[in-house]
Length: 153
Image 1 (cartoon, helix red, strand yellow):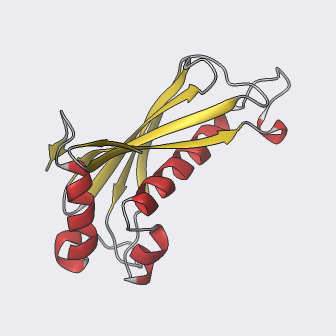
Image 2: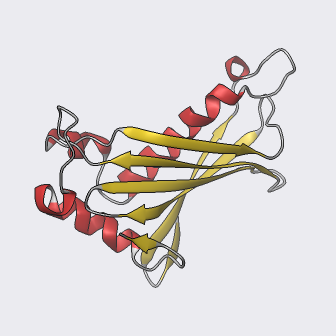
């Protein structure tokens, strides 16, 4: 977890690429990257003190409505992978996360990506997170506010 002025700006989630994640070419299949992004996002939220479980217990969901991934170089079986996650944008109705995936042994970039989520109730009706879960929104805002180039919408 990196900090600036005592504020968490990004988390680093580390794991080893598993054999089951590779394809016939011996590289990690592209379908695994959304799972890796989710692992990074889950870790980020937990380290920010607002786990997915605690958010959902308050009747709020964060469904994904858009995702992108840019592949730079292949990851292979048993590579130690790092997924760096940070909040890219934050508003009372949406939040987006950005990801940088790289090989831990040589810092070689593997992929970059972004996921965009809406704050909704359990029926997927959009809601205002700042009003519905102010303690969660406040905690995430604190994590986000000092990130250079970030956008509070």
